[in-house]
Length: 320
Image 1 (cartoon, one colour):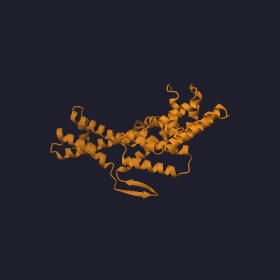
Image 2 (image 1 turned 90 degrees about the vertical axis):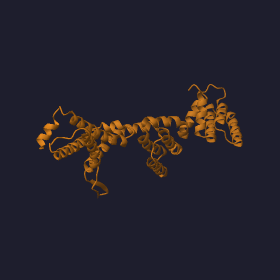
Image 3 (image 1 turned 30 degrees about the vertical axis):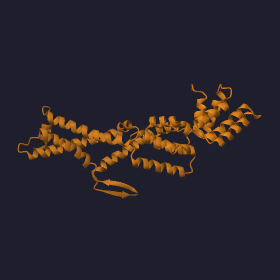
Image 4 (image 1 turned 120 degrees about the vertical axis):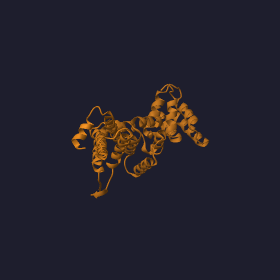
């Protein structure tokens, strides 16, 4: 069968089995390409799939699968004495072979060439690798500004020193499907940040960017909100506790805050007794009420820690 006859036969609308095979292999190839992008950009897969390079990537995958099926059908027809295309089970097998065969063949590498510290794949995979790099660049540019704004908002007033251990652990526990390799890479990033000389706020945002890619914006924000009392900087917690004390309608807010903190986070009796004496001295001192409030808040935070002090301050106003 020559090429003109083949095209005429394939283009015949009455040949519904061939039409279904071609549509099926197109969908299989396109779906495979789209799923690669989804697995690569888990936090915002739709932006990758529907970016211009992303569309070009999965459309090319679909067309390559279609081309593979056409080649297989041409070969099968040449093997038939009648020159007819296969039907039924044989056509189904060729369709599956084309979809999976294209997936493997066009991702194959003959060898890897290293040029100026860059690895270049030589083989059929070169085209798809080049297009995937274009997708990476396009998605990175489109996501840069929104990622920066989201992480800056979510990680605002979060202390890297206080959050570097349990915020990542909490996010990993929430996801429950993080691979060991991903967890290992995250731990390496946090360790490198811990050893760096960057300001604490910058470290927190850098960690937030990595967690953002792992969890997405919504889950990261919920995790930070849930753990906020234990993630906040000391300055932020101090301001919040002082504000709650000043707004409290309780006649004796400092003693009440001490009582709540003692119930939430008990410490040794000797430490508790020393703190109580210190607070009584502050309350009875000849200083302004604002100074008393701030001094008492400092002592309570120092003794019980940020998380307990924050929780005790919230208990001063249960309606909040």
